[in-house]
Image (cartoon, rainbow, N blue to C red):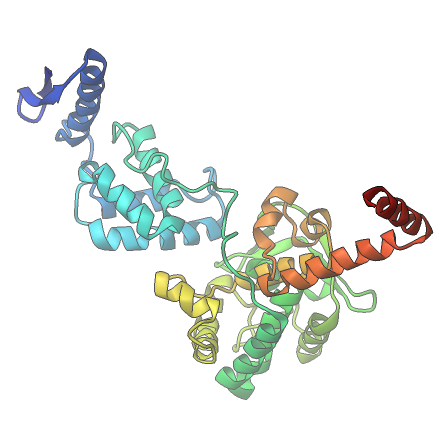
Length: 376
């Protein structure tokens, strides 16, 4: 067995770290400990960030205009995804977080691991950390929320009814229409808030989606910077027509005070509707099951967009068609498509039934007869 000694800068001397049977394993252990000791060494210059302090700095300096994360929606998402980790470890030094603690958090809250990996990677990039304990723990960014189950048309109708009930005469109809349009058009919340009357053509059943509204009330290009014209039909057409008749203001979706709705105000109206919806569900429904696994994984308004993608896929549209409607690439668009599992057997049965009918045509009949003769 080969003993391994490594210099610890915090102590100013070499310390014994263990022993290994081969030189190769001893070298690996030595390299691991060198990195670990360098990470834990007190800072000789620069700020020795706590987890909470670095997160605040990261959200402020690594998000916004002229950064690689310019969108306000990205800021909001990353702020929410790092909240639980800061609640647990906020007062500790960033360099003191261990790999084991990072792995434990990633196992319990895998949907946050990718954001925390980015936060720690930026600390490494500016030289504050030697290595990131979250490296390799982030999920594939293309996966998104592809593991969730989609709402159904009946559940969208329930959400509409509950919005009317929860917000009454003053704003119930307006928010119910917002929910219906979000579900049946599939636009992003900011895009709905940014919609103006001149971009709606109900006669042709088309809406131009070129802009989104930010939390500060200004309009900006959509998240993907793609201009698109989407089809409006069915429940969404009726809901949008009601909003157009309700006011002559420039913006289509208005707040209770008559001002353009801002994305950060949607949650205020969504939360009571979501709570009422949850109360209508049985314990074996997928949403209560999801919340039992993660109490913070609530139904989000963005899942109305997931419904639209899943519904269009269930109607037989291709990912190419759906991506054109939702304003994403085909690869990203697949995140919004969740097959309704309870209908899978019906779809398979229908597909197999169609194939059997095709085989029973004249050519298929002759083929079947030849096959029977061969078998005999």
